[in-house]
Length: 253
Length: 156
Image (cartoon, rainbow over all chains, first blue to last red; front, side, top):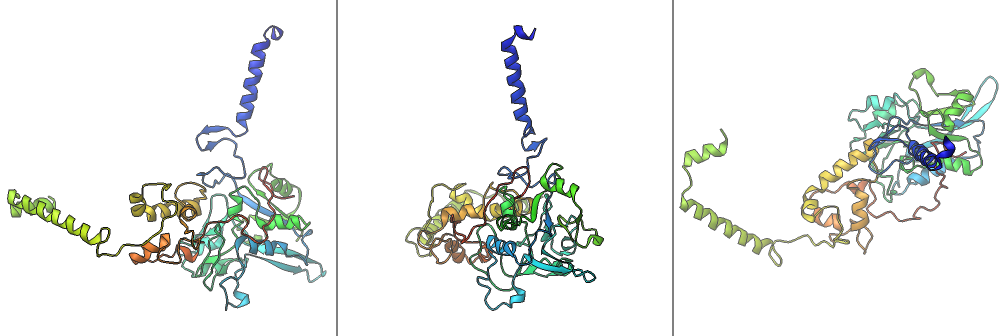
C-alpha cells in the first residue's frame, strides 16, 4: 500500500520533519515554550525559573599560582581602581578571590576561587532593608543599585565574605556593568554575558589558561554538562550546614 | 458634589461678560507667553544640540514628559526581571544622543541630558554609575575569549 502512494508518503515525511523541527523549541503560545532552550533569551523575554545557573569548580584542576579568573573578572566588570584613588587596597571591590585551603592533619592543600555562591536561600536578601538585594528568577543573586542605600547589612550576613562596598566615586565604568559609589556589589555571574548566551568571564579565562576547572551551566537541566557531572562526582557546597543551597559547588575539597 | 460645582453655585453661572473677560485674558497670556518664552524671548531656553533628532522611539513632546517613567520602568524590567533588548533603554538614548564633540550626553550645558537637567535644576545622577558614552566595540583592552554556550554548558 505504501508503494502505491509515493507522493503522500513524501508529504507525510515532510510533515514529520517539520513537526520535529518545531519540537526543537515547541511554542505553545507566544513566549511560552514546552522545551526551554538554555542560553540567550529573545529580546523582551524575562529570566525564567526553569533555568538555574550554577558552577562546579574542580579544585583538583585549580592551580595555586594562577589567578586568571580574578583578572578576567576585573577586566570584564571594570573593577580596575579607576577613580578609586585614596581607597585602601583592602577596601578595593573584589568579586572573586583565590583562597588556599590546608588540611592541618595531613598538610594537603587546595586552591580555589571564592565568590558569591548564588544561594537559593540567600542571607543577603533576607537582611536587606530596602529590597535591593534580590535573587533573579534564574537563581542569580544581584544588587539593585537603584535602591541600595549602602548599609552593608548584606556584607555582614554573607558567610562567604563575597560582597564589596564601593568607597570612592568611579569613572569609566563599562557600559553594560554600571556601578557606583555608596553601593554594595558582588559577583553577578557575569549576568551581562549570560543574558547574551555566553559563559561568565572567569569560566572562559580558566579554560583559556588551560585548566578548565570551572564548569558553568543550568543546574535544572538534567542533560546539561554541569548536571551530568554533579551526578558523577562528589561535590561540596561550602558551609553546607547553613543549608543555603548554593549555586556554586566545589569538587575535591 | 465637586468643588467646581460649589464654586459656580456660589458665584452664579458666568455671563457673557465673564466669558469675554476670560477669552481676553487667555489671549493676552498666550501672547505674553510667546513673547517671553519664544524664539528671541527674554526667558532663557536650554541650548541643546540633539544628535540623531529624527529617529526617536516616541514623538519629542512625549519623550520630554515621559522619559523618566519610561526609564524607570525599563530599569526595573531589566535589573530585576532580566528583560534585555526591549523598550526604552538608557544605552539606547546614549547611543543616539551622545554629542559628536565629546562623545557623551553630559559634560557641558549643550550636551543632550545635561542641558535640560541643568536648566530645570533636576539633579542627574544616572551617570554616577552608568557610562554616559556609547559602547564602542573593542573598547576593552583585552577582551576575554568568548565561547558560546551550547545547551547550557560552559567551556570545556
